Image (cartoon, rainbow, N blue to C red; front, side, top):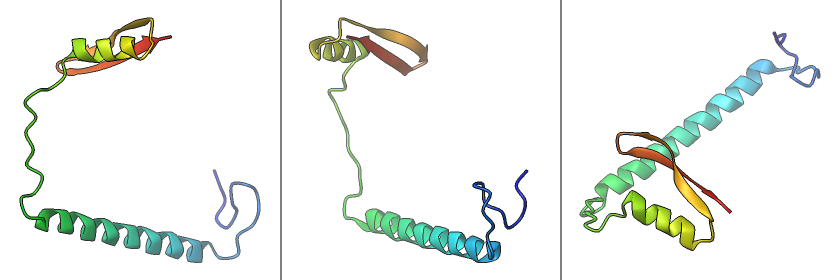
Length: 89
């Protein structure tokens, strides 16, 4: 368990509380930045309503892998509509 005021490298830190304050300020700035960005997106006219009518199927993705040069391609995990495909060169 690390000791207060000692970094993982073993060096002593004279002001661990100032380090926490710096991390907290950085996190606060990042959170504020995200909030501004998400607000701007929501305010955009039309929003992000987007409908895709021609969605690729699992067979399309397997064909894409084979066309990309993978000798073998297949599903290694699937639950419902979620799946993981793997290709072997």
